[in-house]
Image 1 (tube, rainbow, N blue to C red):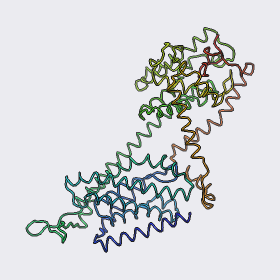
Image 2: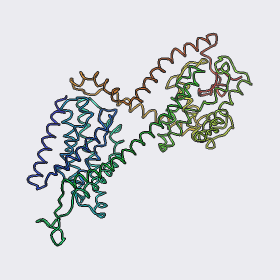
Image 3: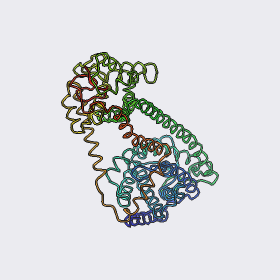
Length: 532
């Protein structure tokens, strides 16, 4: 491990132990050992449920237990829970370096100390809760959660930068910011657990007359027993079970959505086997359409729906005879009319399925021109559905980048030039510019991620080991998806060679005149050969 990371871990551990001793001895804040033990078990469970992030860190549910400890106990007790949480079962099973566990413990303890200090400074309640002080604790808790996230992000970013050469800003943009809303929600859940635990585990000391006994500062004395602590943890575990069931079914719902997406991809990939040179076209068009939608600030739900429509935009192509699609020679008028019917055919199929019916318009109109010169319904301008205008740009761009039996690939720069040239005639100008801006932003992010970083020698020597670690930590579903994509990439060139071999008597370099035939003037994905 990098010496700087080891030094940071050592300093963090020493500082945390020092703070705990100071608060417990000089600050007169007792450590509730039995409660620490019980909530420590909860913290280990929450940490074990975490997942590794692409940048090398981990996203866990440990903040739930930590904020439960902050609310239910006090600062030194919560810090000890944080130290214990680093020894989660996955880390021990993988037999990682003790320094990694020490670093995790130090980061959590320091972040918990900062969050607890902010929470109590802003008036957050602990141990004794009423409805009013529980509500007053919400704002202090959210501020404390934001402080926890910011400090944790900085410390993890430094650790990954020194040990793995991870790009700091890439980590912040790619993982840390994405996790901030989750951590705020987890903190609220932790407050709820802390309130439940405290209400069951502690009570105010009363005298013989039933009045509260106050300390020298005038605060009520709050005490607890082993039996009450057990009652508290049982109440918390009951809530944890409910949350666990919700978490499980939420995960199952995500899996179903992923399976839905994957089923669509498998369907269109199978359909594309009729035209081997199209392999992967629908997925690429869908990805580009989603890129445009995000650039236009579509809600995520709408991005997903558009992606589904883009995946199925050529669903009607199987209705066209294969010999028409693959012929490199000019199409007759009758053949071209059959080709032009494929958006209608695809839309009609989608309209028959209730949960796909809202995609039918995008499929029906993705060959309309912005100036009204397209097909099927000769719509123009904003009368063309926005989703169809987006798919038209994404479709044309991908088509121009890849070789077809009747022409060669045009390349990225030429494809962008043709999109701009046909902007306002074939394509919506706003969508063209949004797409180009999105591609440039994507290229900038890729360049920043690929930029060489100063990686310590030791980290460089361990690089192959880290490369092997990521696939191991990935889910089985993700690994299988990668395997399928790799197989498809390996098949693509062979299938294209076979298809082009069958058409060897044709003229691969021939292209259609502007505005005519199976190829649009900007190379939009469409039909074989040229129109008459």
